[in-house]
Image (tube, rainbow, N blue to C red):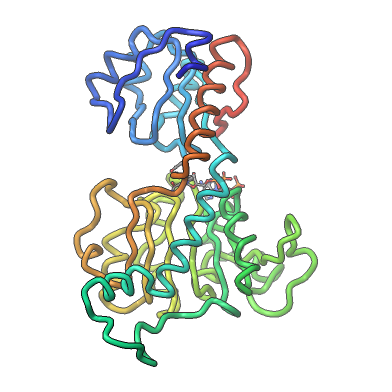
Length: 328
Ligand code: NAP
Ligand code: GLV
């Protein structure tokens, strides 16, 4: 706020919690810039109410809360905070992978409930990671950072990207990809990106071969309900699903059914389809870990995100191109 105060006056909409819609609409009407959070819905109505707006600076890397097309139509910059939260979010993804496979939350609850009456050979057995396959859906900044950590755990990494997702039902695309890099067999040099031995596979191959599936795509029309009943049907019954991307990438009702039917072994979620609400049966499942959207929640990272959003706003307000423009 003090950095922002060096170049303009500012008003703070809410110091805690979500800014009420009416306050948001009233607040933007004479503002030149808006610094907002991922919980603020910046739709066409808000953008039209902000007739003087020059920049909408999201304090998040994901920007699915903003109608970017409506902003661009009016010549308003939209900015986000890429990079500064990559490592924190990758760390949290790994916290979830380890916690769900080794039953950390369940074991803690077991002990606190007074059930630990002595060491037992078969007590709370989990699933090991060494030699298993991590499937990364969306191989961008966070997806790669998650993949990098997998080598330390002795895991093989397979991934699929934007085209593999967009054309997942196109037999021709899948045939080409399968031919180029089969999901099994030795890794070729061409499969190494950024020094990482990861293999690109089709979306269906990723579902079929992964022991851990970790989601790192943005929420978009092509990724909404990407993980649905058909996807669960292709997964190993021993697979774990991790989501630190956006809730609606998973069809949460289908996830509940898959878990109830033992279609997969467990899930660990930082984000939810109807956030902050959580589909009720998930709350009762011991093989599911639920976190309140804390992927980037370290002091260092949240400070860096806030500073970057402010610098983006200042760029635009002082007549420069912002350093992190959203280009859909
Ligand atoms: P990124 O670097 O842009 O990576 C996203 C990846 O997904 C890229 O490989 C991209 O492909 C691919 N992709 C983009 N649009 C797609 C589409 N429409 N369909 C399929 N694939 C698409 O982003 P990031 O920094 O890794 O962040 C990823 C997401 O994580 C964010 O959008 C956000 O929603 C979420 N996130 C959550 C938290 C949390 O607190 N839980 C924290 C940070 C981020 P290309 O390389 O071809 O563009
Ligand atoms: C957090 O969810 C982000 O998109 O930065």
